[in-house]
Image (cartoon, rainbow, N blue to C red; front, top):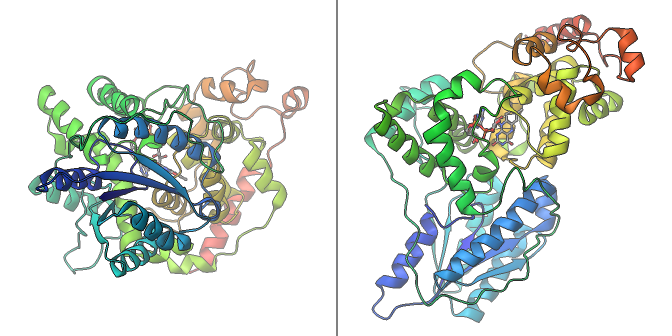
Length: 469
Ligand SMILES: Cc1cc2nc3c(=O)[nH]c(=O)nc-3n(C[C@H](O)[C@H](O)[C@H](O)COP(=O)(O)OP(=O)(O)OC[C@H]3O[C@@H](n4cnc5c(N)ncnc54)[C@H](O)[C@@H]3O)c2cc1C
């Protein structure tokens, strides 16, 4: 019996471990059987701040995958143990009971997952189960180094080298695996993972085919207007596939393959594709996590910023979390997160800059809150995004880049369309007042005064960063 252990790769399409395991089963002289497991680890998820909405999406994705695997003759079992530490013994027991000879999985980069897999491999091998780790959910798995043979620390030079490497080493996605047996009658009782909650299934339908369909529609029909619309939160200008990538319902290699196909059909050069560059940010943050494992341990990328003196204000933090800062664009972003489990990228930058620069609250507080609420929470991208915003990370720009929430609002939501959707108490304001309503209007509408004075806050953070020098 061959076993596939599904983790952050809940899909049939381009799933290297699943594909290789099925191929091995079908190649054997007497066809071998195959099964799959998914292991819920509720305590570990709590420690990792996994959001209930993300676990809700994942539960439904597992229902879909169970059905699709069943059609190929592969049963899916759901196991549970509180933490990663319990997995080696749990898997070994499962392997004994099911006479498993081979266990397959896809690589994961963060340190806890790496240590978990090392322990599982050692334990299973000791009990005569052969383990196979396949290459992961990234487009390029090779660790690129600069001319000094060191890891890159800045995105643009890394990206140039990444595209160059990619052009010479294209790793095409795997197809769906072949059936290994007759279709099975699949249990129809719903899988509900511990800690999961309702999520906006109207915004993110949870079947793999829906995820692939969204990707295809975006790449072939909407991508051409991406650069024009991507920064306007009131428009549906981005792909919104991040929840699917974060739970591994689609692979980034499949995204690349579609980009290449669309570019081929439209006579464009895929190497210059703008959306590919965005996907590459996700890869870059995983690359950094791999090269600098301290990032998995809550450490700042730039060591000198560990000495920055942060403010501690439970009141200001709560105002930010609840979307009651009195800065309409910040509040709209935070309320979008609280209501939908997702936030537009421009607003992630605005709200993160607001927390870390203007409220001067430690980026780790924001990172945790985002992770606890995002349906697309992704350790590497979230950590990278927060450290970039706080100027503790890999950003090439200097620390005095401070987003002005008023001008960001005027530039990217000029008529306040987005603000009005998520801060409805301001819905009748004109385009002049909406970005910073006059005090009298605030009082009348019961909308809070700004939680901090912008000019004062800007000077304060500049002084704090200067102290580090
Ligand atoms: C403070 C902060 C926190 C963030 N936290 C997360 C997170 O937890 N999970 C997450 O997937 N993204 C995160 N991002 C990155 C980005 O905001 C989202 O990936 C993007 O908004 C998702 O929407 P989309 O799928 O429509 O993106 P598109 O613009 O269509 O981009 C396509 C894909 O490329 C990747 N991508 C795009 N921009 C980035 C970026 N700046 N960094 C990393 N990957 C990127 C994502 O996988 C995204 O789905 C964060 C950014 C910031 C500033």
